[in-house]
Length: 275
Ligand code: AMP
Image 1 (spheres, rainbow, N blue to C red):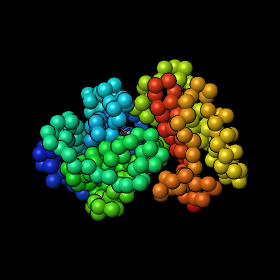
Image 2: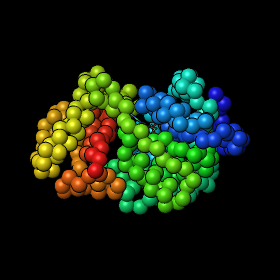
Image 3: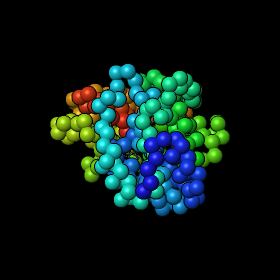
Image 4: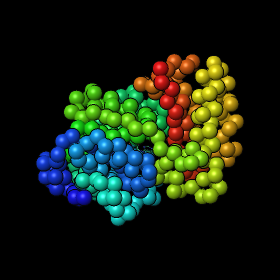
């Protein structure tokens, strides 16, 4: 595996990459969800690039930027073992040198739901991924459905700004008990870890109720009853599969989406309802 830390090093490697080139952007602290994206990229592409960058622009002032888990050495070993060709791991001064001020804003889609609770989050995500796409210039961009609204934001950015890359969305990888894998699961103590899968069970309950024809309010009530009592719910909702605006009734394609806090740790999850 080759390693690039600067944009010049990355361009030198990616400029001569075999094609198609697949790209998996991450914030590191890699788990099976990330490695599954790498495997899917490996299966479809002649070369695979991964980035590790904990992007300060997508964290709010009171969020977990400082304590976000970082372990570049172990991550590098995992990626080398998974057959990754190039790891791009810049630091913040490389991505955001003095005077950096440009941003990418996708509009309303970035302001609803997660974007309403985390103002500026999706602007940070779109801005960093736009820059990474310019550095890597991949043919295929591999993203996880775990962050469903993020995938919609990035697909919109790619479409609106004619980035010459195609987004490929891969299913959420879960622990045996249903908890969606996330780097933030490492924050959970054992009691919180035991409660955390209730978010997934709540979403399953809500989807089943909607598919049985129950009203949204009833479906949300049934789902809330399944959530561990200690969890603090940010939202459970039924939203449009493209715009992420709330739906009053089930009109697929749609997502049931949820966000809840277990102690200090905020987890999100979703289920897809295809048309
Ligand atoms: P992150 O490191 O959390 O920014 O995630 C990097 C990429 O991995 C994003 O496209 C995520 O959606 C994806 N990802 C994170 N967790 C999972 C998971 N459990 N299953 C599938 N993809 C995931």
